[in-house]
Image (cartoon, rainbow over all chains, first blue to last red; front, side):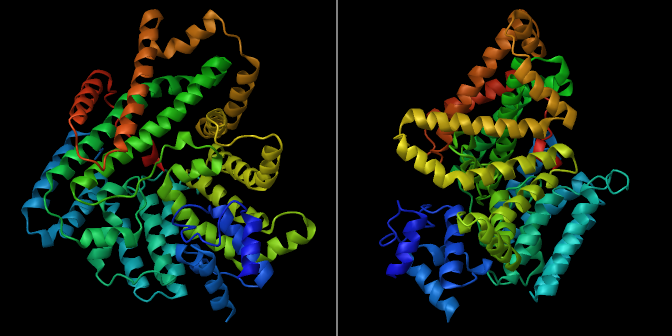
Length: 74
Length: 475
């Protein structure tokens, strides 16, 4: 989790990724940020995220992103 | 059947009576029949293409495998291309089925969502047919999303006077925008853009900004009318505009303008392209060359170019449309690529993002960038675009004669000045109406009647009769 938070901070240092649970529904992240996150996950965790997984519930919080990583890795 | 016509008014009245008088379990059937009738009214033969599209997509997606999804795309895009580019393909100019662009988008969106297993395929052919042929959104959008619209269609709706009042008010706002504002400025724009070489910079700049007003008033006015009609039927449509000219950047502008189309592109073209294997490989290769570039930025270069080129040529096979698409692709990419640098510069010069002056600067800057794009879009040819740019920068004399020339489309002397003043007042009134629209959720208060009366008077006095075709119908 620590590592993921670090990478997320590099993309948007003004967002409280630790506590925020409405990153998408609360319109905190833009589609540009999401693409940055997708590219970061690809580089750092070596996972290709299919378009069908790009839905709000998978990106609303750091926890949800971590779950997505675990699911796609597993 | 134009939305601004007597037959349409009668059609709506009859529909509302039937809709609320009959047993509510038949309401969806009435909407389906109304949609097919509305479509057939424009051309009774071309409805065949709508029916082919409906049946093919419904039947194929009952089993949503990849080959079926591809067939839905081939059939629908095939028909769309045949009608849209018939002249370019060497066939004679064919009259296209009503709303073909919009129902094609909805059909492909539905098929894609079925294929991605986001939704269960609709088993009832007639229910599916209603989704595609719901008349308020058929001609010009908003592009409906199946999972948002279907439950509303199948629900029963009891008569609610509040919905009728709010819907009627919204229709009035739409008529006001369309007939008064868009209709009035159209004269000026058409005159100037039909022979731009005859006009100086001032006139051309004025015409271009009027064009921004016309585009918004025409298109969002249409949306107000159809959203109002739909509200009367108890069905809420997706909002297509969110005060776009107050956007502070181009990406933000495109999140506020023609929202349903941009959402469609994002879900069905942009994100699949971003995550596609070919794009992943290409961006990794580019990452080796441009080591300092952000990985995410490299990921969106090709999808951005793809989406904007498609959006451009979707408007028609014309150089201006393609150039407009490429222009916005470049602007969007520049905005993405420079984001981190701009942020650093802003920090260094202590640029306060929350200051009102900074916000105004950003709004004006965005509007100018949009205006340049729409200037390209509106030009009748490439040489016209060049002439307009040249005159804007070289013919900037503000002399009595150039002001008179700028006024020419409005008449002479006092008449021209009065017309300009009226337009200015109308635009301010419009801003007031827009703000009051945002409070639409609240109770229908007394001051609405005053606005409604004012709008009716202005429509009667200044409405341009005959301005019944909406600009986006052509696309």
